Amino acid sequence: MQYDKEFDASGLACPMPIVKTKKSLADMSSGQVLRVIATDPGSVCDMQAFADQTGHTLLSSGTENNKYVFLLKKA
Image 1 (cartoon, rainbow, N blue to C red):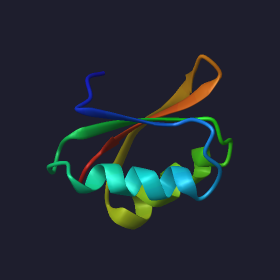
Image 2 (cartoon, one colour):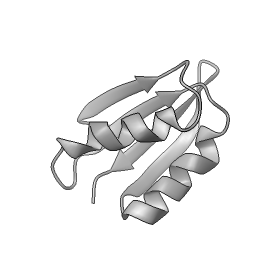
Image 3 (cartoon, helix red, strand yellow):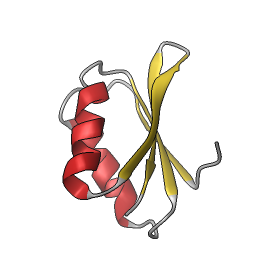
Image 4 (cartoon, rainbow, N blue to C red):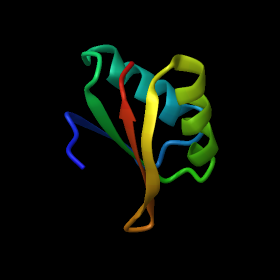
């Protein structure tokens, strides 16, 4: 899937992947897609909760090269 911007949160522990994801989304337009890469296992449920609370859409959540990869569509 195509995305407009990528943020690599590898090595960051909770809550930093979510905090930095929020900052990455701030300068994006509605409908654009952000790809987030993380290594923190807690980011799996955190990213879904973040999307639910902020109105953004979690398009996909999976793993790639032993890292967690998320695609978020900005509300």
